[in-house]
Length: 71
Image 1 (spheres, rainbow, N blue to C red):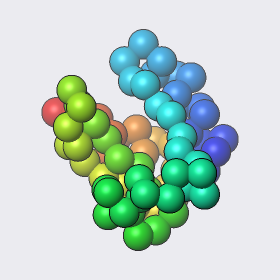
Image 2 (cartoon, rainbow, N blue to C red):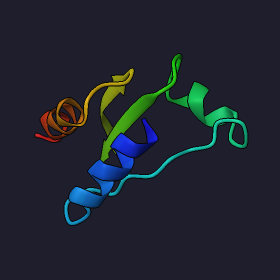
Image 3 (cartoon, rainbow, N blue to C red):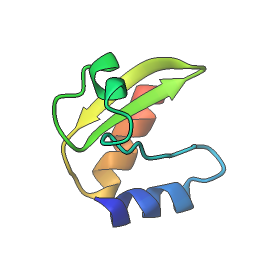
Image 4 (cartoon, rainbow, N blue to C red):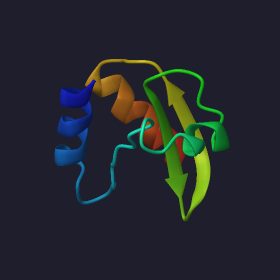
């Protein structure tokens, strides 16, 4: 999924901030957000969780789900 996420980040850098979290170095954060599978994408707006996407998918589907969550 890294190439897909990198492509989304590059193509939408003017409207999204995309970052990764190393769960081995940050073991408390996944439980804070009830992450039970990898990959899990958590979508925030103004510091609040507005969506969560679990599992891999094609780039177009990922972009669609991100922007749906942000509406």
